[in-house]
Structures are given as C-alpha cells and as structure tokens.
Image (cartoon, rainbow, N blue to C red; front, side, top):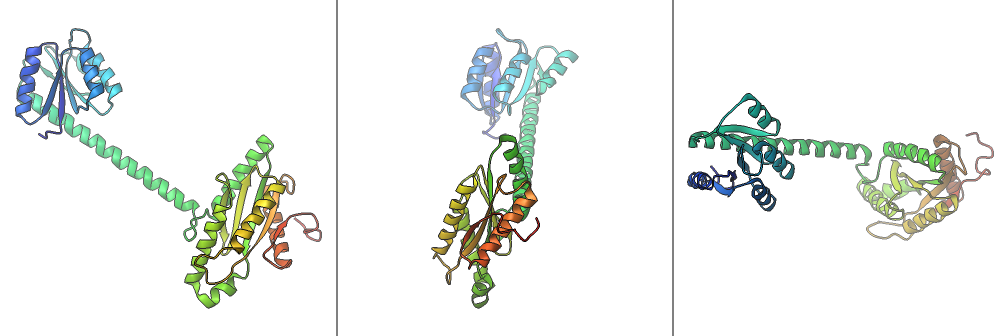
Length: 315
C-alpha cells in the first residue's frame, strides 16, 4: 500500500497502539498514535490523515461520537471502528457516522489491511466523483456562458441583452431608479469592410467592441445586437448622465487607431426609463429612433430621444 496513506490509530492502550503502528509501518503505511479523544482531535487538526482506526471505548470519549467530531473537522477522512465486541446497534451507529467498517479485537492484521484498503478505495471513488461533478458543473457553466455571449466580439448577445433589461427594469420599478440604454451603430461599415474583406471587418468589430466595453461601468453591459449594431444598458443612470457617457463612447471610437485600416465612427441613440418610456418595448424603440435621428443628422452623432423625433410616428 502507498506511503501516501496516513493512518491515525486512536486507542487508550499505548502498547497495543504502538505494536499495530509498527506492523502497519512494515506494510508500507505511515502511522501515528493518539491515546485519547483530545489527543486525536489535536493531531487531526495539525495533520492530514487518510484513515483513522478508532477504538470504540476510549478513556475520555465514545469512539463513535469522537469519529462524528473528526468527520466535521476533516470530511474526507475514512474511519474504521476497533471494538472488543460487536452488536447491530454499534454497527448501525458506526455506519451512520460514516465509518467504512469495524474490526474485532484481537485484531487479524490481514483484516485490518483489507479494511484500510477498502477505506482508501472509497476515498478515491468519492474524490473521483467530486472531480466528475465539478467538471460537469464547469461544463454546464461554460455552455450557459456561451449561450449569453457573442462568439465574435466576446460581448453579451442580443438574447442576454433582453434578459438583463427585463430584470433591470423590474429593479428600477421596485427601487424607483432611472435606467438608460444606448443603441449604437457603426457608420458606413459596409464601406469599410468591402475594400478590406470580411476578416478585417471582423477584426474591426472586435476592436470596436473592446472600446465600447471599456467606456461603461462594471455594473453596465454592452451587447452585440446584430451585425454592426450594439446596445448598452446602464442601470441607475439618468437621462442627463446617459448622454454624457454615450458621447464619451462615440468620441472614444472616433479617436481609435489601433489595428484599424481606416477611420471608423459610430452613431448613438439614447433613451431613459421612466423619463422617455413606459415599458421595455417602448424604451428600445425610442433609443432606436434616436439612433436613426443621429444617422439622419450626418452620423458620428449622439442623439438623446425627445418627442420631436417621433412626432410623426407611432410607438
């Protein structure tokens, strides 16, 4: 058996404890002894043991109750009860508190080694199962993340934008907070992409996405809404503050250089809740109307929604 297996023998008979420790050492195990409950708990706290062999009757403790306390301190440890008698009650109690087995005195060395081997195997099986479950959880979280993230830009996708906006509008109602959203479109993106190719167009989208993400706060989100169109949600941001942040975003893109093959600008439409809209659909529509007003005004503009924009339209 591996030297990595560490066994703590807990028995009030120091001679028995030392004799058993010597035998187990010869069989390739690391062993230590404790002669009462207090000493055992101290050694468990200080060291890392694979298995405890614990006498059911100790000078200061009941062995099964002591093992219950050991399990609370070290949940992964395995236990084997050593007893001079056996009963259905003691066996049931031992199993209830997590022991793998119990062995009778006088001990048969092979029985002890078999029980330790079973304990080590169970510990390994439990460890493997924990790793498997952790891997499954990690994979599930990865797929959930992929379901909310745009594969090209790394920003949130349109689906998550709508989910997040629904939650934040509910929160805005509950706490009487403002909320602003931006609809953003890259100006004349086709004119940039056509001479440089789709690969360069994708690189530009990725670069612009990084800029957009850096211009908002940690509690805000930016999403790729579709194609070269983006959207941002800024919880607890008023209409006045929203247009300032939106224009900062526009200027950051206008001044961007990096690996771009030419100048790129964006147009931004801003609308706020509850100032400009009564519900989610209306809020998105008004930010979108403000975006197209920015386009009509000559592009590379930030436009804040007001009633004049939709004077001749119906929401």
